[in-house]
Structures are given as structure tokens and as C-alpha cells.
Length: 552
Image (cartoon, rainbow, N blue to C red; front, side, top):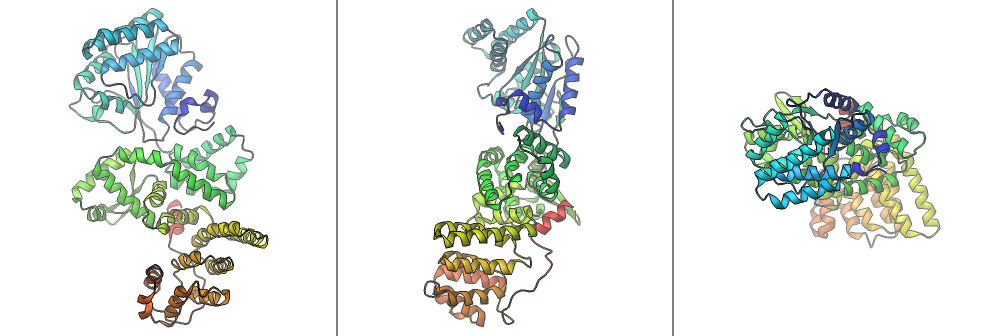
């Protein structure tokens, strides 16, 4: 049962079976628990990592390990929920701990006494002392100490937002040995990093790094085994290049790796496309939460980097960002430093003396294209970009041929709507082959089949993205042969003007067709030679080349 946002609801055995790469940290944390002194001087820990890096799973594994290593005689685990929105002062914090402890230990008397305290002590400072005393009495009576596992400690401290409560918390954690706290945070938070704050430099900090290539493969093996997928090792061995692309898009984020896991195990492109559309819809709450947690300037900078990455798959410089966002260069540099610390961007490379920044999770560029593209073609550009790096050219060819056969079968059976649906998939495959020697034949076949079923809209939109003059002459011949010249008259006239170099009459065309023709003209310029099939050439540009170059 794969749960990406609520791993605490997964069975313990499944959490353990799919936990990879962090076992060394679990061992270190458990050794720290075992070495804690009696009384004052307990060491407290915060694990820091961006969203989706596995912080909650780390706390779950610590909870399980306390039982597995026979530490329950001396320690009682109290695990907080991922979101503790009801905590607004330190009294709330200790009462929440008491409620969770009562549920874990099935102690209804503790729960009742905690509820009474809330009514008896309206003052926050008094409630803090009474609630902590209640926890301390419970622990002393059972000869145990409390191990608090606090998810999103940074958000809890932000909600409390009181230096007096932070000072009280420090005093308890430093001078009373009843409690050890292991917390998580999505970034190095102000309460722990600012010199003037009571909790400054108080916690031992651990950072969760992105998964490395071998660890991603280990995670996929573990997930496949839990799902009962056979022969996963053979699949991983055959798809090494594809896995490198997966590593690139996810930035080593375990949650995104598992989201793309379903795409990895698919074979047919139609399944991949459906799964990708579903995936990019599912990551909407993930990315909305990440972006909306940022201040406005950082959002604006990240939005610009995503736009650039979606077009070029390359980084951009602080100078270019400042120009595009109309922010001062020193503001941009400061915000990029913070975004880098938070795990949103990373320095891509160095060109001369200028740092280049790109997205830590390139999948966000695809999501940005799909969600914020102004035109339909822009909104679907993510699909072409993904396929250009996900599939080898030699894989795209057989898939095109298979879809051509499916098209012919539907057409011969009189299933025209189904035949048209296969053309939608063919269109994106053909676009993904742009720049390769196989592109011309695939495009010509697509146009021919569109005309067979009278899909004039797809012919028009497809030619709107053509950048090779030879296809224009071929398309014009097919229109003449198809018997659809009346339906495609504006496009046919436009092709005539382009093929003869006469662009003056384009202004007489309909606005929609004129826009397509102007795009073609901008790409081609006036034709300089007789149209013919484009010569084969070696591709050294485009998303596939750029990303594969980065992966080497």
C-alpha cells in the first residue's frame, strides 16, 4: 500500500521493507538515545530536509527501532502527527504530548487529567508548568523517560512564536532529563539559527541528502518487491539510461521517485502518457504547498527559473533573473542563496565568473509548463520534452509503427473516434523525434493519416510546429490528393505562398491560420531552395542532448 503523504498509515513491515539509504542515520540516532545521561545534559536532535525527502519515515523507523532493540524498558516513544495545527503555546505542546502518550499507553486517567489541566490553568506559563509536571510524574512512576518524535518542529515553533516559551522549552530540555526530543524541519529555522534566539545552536543537526543513483535503484527494487512486481532487476538492468533520466527529473527526492515509479514500469507510450498526466495532476498539492510557503520575491524568482528551465533545460544567471524579475541584483543573490539552502534550486555550473542556477527538481519545470502554459501547445510541451529524454530514438520508432498499425485496425473496422485518438499520441511521439533523421517520415505519415479521417484541425496545428521547409511541400501535395482542399483552403493557400516565397497575401488569411503561418515564417524565413526531404543530420541541441550531456 504505497502512501506518499501518509507513511504513518502504512503497515510497519512495509515501511521497513521500503526504507532505504538512511539506515546509518537510524543507527546513529538509536546509539545517541542509548548514550543519554541520567538527569541534565540530554542531547536533542533535528533532522532537516526539503519536503518529500523522507523525514517522517526516519521518525517512524526510530519508533520501530526502539521496540526492536529492546529499549522500551527505559524509553516511551511519543510520536507527534505530521501537522500539529492546534499547538499555539508551550502549554499546548505539553498537553498534546500528554494526549498522544495516553493514546499510546492506553492510560485513560492521564487523558482525563490532561483535559482538566486545560480548564484549570488559563495562563500559558502556568499551564506549561502543570502539563510538564503531569508528564514527569507519569514517567517517574513507570521508571521511563519520554522520547518525543516531533514532525515539523519548525512549524510548531513558528505557531508558538514566543521567545519566552522558547526559553522555557530550552530550560526544560537542557536541565531536566525526563525528555529527549528528535524533531524534523524542512529548513534550518530561525529559532535555531538566529543568534538572539533562546534555541540558537541548541540542537544537533542532521541533513538528509538526496538519494544517489544506487540508492534510487535500491528504492525501486524495494517498492517493486513490496508490490509483488516480478523481474524488477532485469527491468532495471535494461533501463539504465531511463533511470538516469528519472534521477535527473526527481533530484533524488524519494517521494518524487516513488511518484515516477509507476511510469518506470510502463512499457507502452500510451500508458506512460496517461500516467504522466495523472502524476503531474497529483503533484499539484505538493508543489503548491512548497511554493506557497515562500515569500513573494522567492516565488517570483523560482517562477522565472521554472519558465527558463521548461524552454531550455539549462540554468540561468542571477543577472538574467534580476533583469527578468526587475529585482536588484543583490536581492536576487540573497534570495537565490536562501532558495539553495531550502533545496529549491542548485548551482548548475560555472561559465566564466557567473553562477548558473537551475531547479533542484526538474520535474517542477514539466509541471510548470503543463499548469501555466498560455497556449495549448505550450501546455503540452512538457510531454514532448519528457519523451525526448525518457525514450531513446530507437524506442520511439517502434512505438510509432505500433500506433500506426492500431490506427489502421480501427479505421478498417470503422472505429473513426478510436482511430483519431491514436493520432493524438502519434502527434506527441512525432514531435519528440524532431531533429532526428526519422522525423520526416513520421511527420509525413501522421499528416497522411490525419487527412484520411478528415482531422483538419490536427493537420493545421501540426504544421504550426514544423521547422523544416520540405514538409510544407509534402503537406501541400497530400492536401491536393485528399479531397479536403475546400476544408483546408486557407492552409493550402498559405502553403502556396510560403512555397513560392510570396508572403504578402498572408494578411488576407484568417487570424488563426495567419498565426500558424507567421510562426512557420519566423522559423524558416523565405525558402531558398526547392522543397525536398531534409537531409539527415546529427543532433547536438534540444532537451535530449542537453540533459544527456548533464548526465554523463
